[in-house]
Amino acid sequence: MATQHFNLIGYASVSTNGQDSQLQRDALEAAGCGRVFEDTISSRATARPGLVEALDHLRPTDTLCVWKLDRLGRSVKEVLTIADGLHVQGVGLLILTGTLTGTYSPTVEGKFFFIMMAALAELERDIIRERTMAGLAAACAQGRTRGLTTVGDADTLAAARARRALG
Image 1 (tube, rainbow, N blue to C red):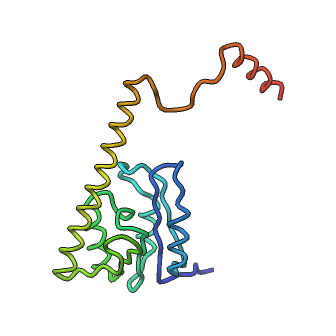
Image 2 (cartoon, rainbow, N blue to C red):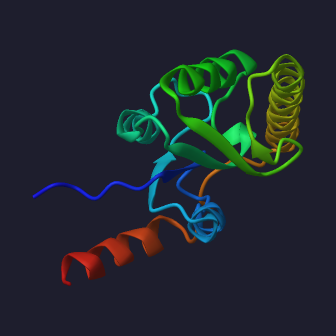
């Protein structure tokens, strides 16, 4: 039995398990994506299996649809490589939100604007990361650490483990 193929293919990406991709999935489905591929992976990870699967699934005349440009790649170089690769394959690129909303066109002016916006998206992502790291360092200096807080003492923990062992 042949698999059904759709012309508008979506890709959603979030950085951690604590984040929810539902906003992206809803927007991609509302745009008419027949299939949505997804990754939940660190922004610094190089392997993104959902993106690889989406790119492998695309055929000429298809369009890859992303919620926002920064979901496509983590650096200007990566975004441009993917966008140019799609163009060479005859695959379109549709961006639903942000400054570059619309279809990517590798004309001289379109490519220049695309490069500038991709650079700004990368800068924004780096600034957010720096602020997050600075906030974590400040919290650590004040004695606060990440993770779950300890509740109770050793006796309470031992009692809880004993109850759990009993079912």
